[in-house]
Image (tube, rainbow, N blue to C red; front, top):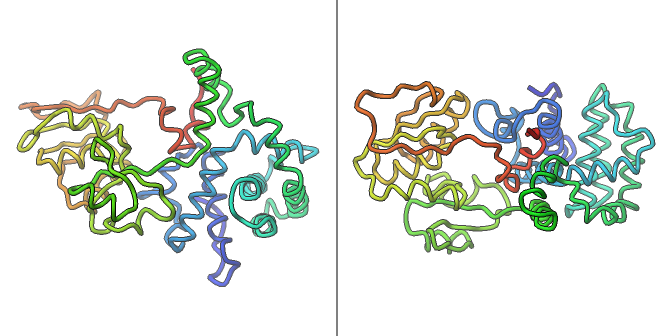
Length: 345
């Protein structure tokens, strides 16, 4: 758990969101924790409960922007720092990254980005002595950062070198760089709805895809959208919603969903009337799956087990769905931590 103490409610507006964003960025870069683990379920950052929805949305955007632009941010800061980013104070590093991300890519006044980053390091015992450095570097970033970004715009720095090399070998260098560029943009939000996709698309100001998925751009917190609390829909990429539909009519059939968490396919099958057994080896992820099913008022048997070793019932199943674990590099646009948590083979 993060060691920083929470400031009183009277603290500067926006500081709490940035403090939690800094903790989560540090969790990804130094503790190798996924965003999913830090944002949802039993392992979520405890400070999230204290944030208003507007601040929670800001925090998520801060984290996503830093991780999507991490390579470019590293280049910019290396040019502005004589001795590199301080390695003995993670909070100084995260404050610089968050401050520069706001200055270069977010609609935040430069003076606010600088001031709040300085406050971040001042509130941390190990990083406090770097407050002056953070202030000076971010002020230079406001003046010189855009030009530094432009000089490396064609270099695809925001992908780890090993991944860019792999994509270049498979798809060609030009296509790989186009893919890398696309990853820098915020993705759309895809929803699977229980019924009347057209009505929900209209209500949520989105569009209905040919597959029935409702697609929209998210500006705010998912939990505040109409229909979330009532369990009328769940977040699920359009492509991820296709495999469960290949079963056809599953009403009354027994289906095993292997590697099931966080539960989008389980929810699809259960809503269609299947008797679902959802298996995943991660207790934390199974807990998230159960929470999602509870919100949706859907039923499924859940099992914490490694699907490779799990024997299952003697009578077997009418069908088995498996979304096998992989490198997840195809999900980087929505999960920007993946690029920095995976290693090349």
